[in-house]
Image 1 (cartoon, rainbow, N blue to C red):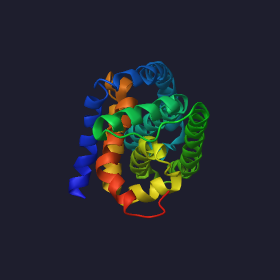
Image 2 (image 1 turned 30 degrees about the vertical axis):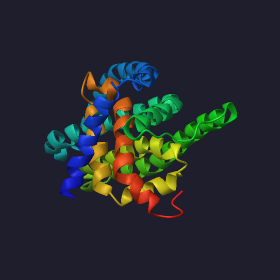
Image 3 (image 1 turned 45 degrees about the horizontal axis):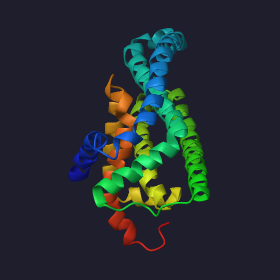
Length: 251
């Protein structure tokens, strides 16, 4: 646990160095432009939502629970920020999915000298459609569980721990999100990806937590997505691929 909890963070920051390497940089430009536009929108929209959330929380609490506002309002604000950050991350990845797949290929080639087999034009189109389908499937997986977690915010007492459960869930989803690119390039299906990552759960959670924090830091958030793709590819190549190779049928 202790080793993996630090290793995932290191892989994220390793990705920051990888996206500046020759042969990799050109795959970063389009995702970076998409991220810049969407995160700028996040900042503008987020201020409005957070103000409305604060007012709604103060009105929702009965008078005899006013003393809880000092605790619940910050927790709700943190949760709202996480929802917005992860929601915009999903949208950015949906748009940039094909480019992120190519970025993962370029990073894997830089690290190992190998890439998935080259594709014809028809295969490239199918791969692009696969990437989009994978993003939609991850979105559905996220929404079902997010709704259940958000319901916890409405249960008195339980709503105090709900933000912390949301933090864990967000870190897990972000790990799955970015590991999908190198794994998907090798034909590993979504269910098998989750199964493989669950064997190194703390590795995935620490990596996802690093991505989540980076997305909330001005400046770093603009390069967080390509950095996460590169870091996840390094993590896949060096930590998870061997486990996959030793497990027949994990596709």
